[in-house]
Length: 161
Image (cartoon, rainbow, N blue to C red; front, side):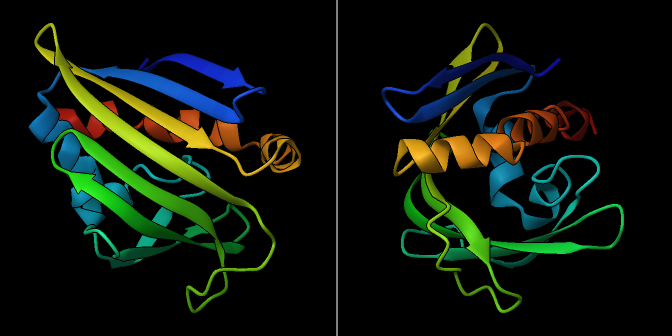
């Protein structure tokens, strides 16, 4: 299994997932940098992602949609803040309308991705910070933690290809 630890810290308003991969950081970075690879793992297996716009540079944005088993579509967006390939990526993530415009629901997280070489592979840490305990609980109840865990567990297969 790719994800080796999941920590929910209610006091800090964070959820941190740690994963280990048998590939160097430069290779793992590609699953974020390449939109065709990103869409093969960003959604959980039952909600695959389609990346519609992908500008992974500071100030850039990513627009994606996830399609559920019944054909239902859920759009999302990233606003990219920091990019230091292949070690660090920081972005905001939230829900969007079909045009990629952020919704006003307040369900936004700040994601910090860190990649570090370790024992011939890479440890990737993704920390999501929530704006409030209410948003953290609402997103947890929606299955966010299980969904991102299932999504990240698809990366090993991409790296092996």
